[in-house]
Image (cartoon, rainbow, N blue to C red; front, side):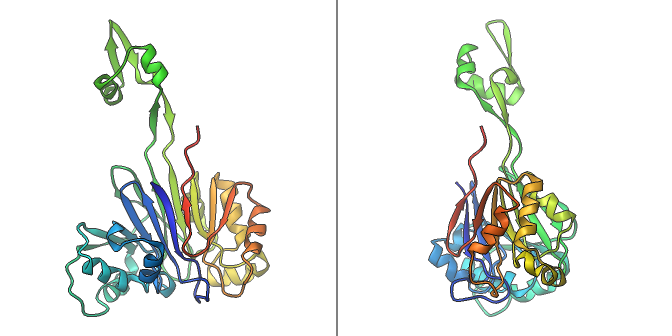
Length: 303
């Protein structure tokens, strides 16, 4: 299952219908929590996400609407005795903030939370199903965006396998070695499969337009990106280190994004439809204006 659970979509000030930030990405066996703002633990309960589902936490920066939920989430992980280590990625310059949040109050601390500060751009973690990359963003304080990349692979073609008489364990040998001898003939992997592009997910918060935004979004199947302001308030966006919905849509269009998820909305706007209209004027892919407690599937692979 590859699915995004939206816990909160407000920017600095939550509203009656929008909680502070919080997003959980389920990606095969991983459950990655991004930017847990205040109230995240309660939103997880509403969304049906258990603390034990979380295998990793990524914090873009240490403004409160992106991190004040950390103490509750960590303490809940301990209360539920999460059976696995939980790495936490965050800008290295904010290590002091992380330490205070990690130990914000007294609790029976039995969880294996592993601080993994990000000090440079590039790959920051690898698992069997993906690598996680970080890129610098342009905000008021040190900020990183994150990108998940699944390695490219190949899709086996049953009809071609049958035509060449390849079956059972022979398929595994062919996948591992790239060639298999059958009845005196060498069958190559290229003859019985087609290239399968790995899927990509990008998470971009609090930033002006900068190279890191485009590098994160490049070729993303699902891009979650802040759209704090509308184009009419572009001056405010630039002054406070944020994007507009139109800018986010331009990024998606230029980077070949498939599904664009807009979020992190200023409380000054009360009509979500205006964000959709502004984005759709610049991007002809799928546009989702995120709402609290909704689920968004990573698009199915292209044929």
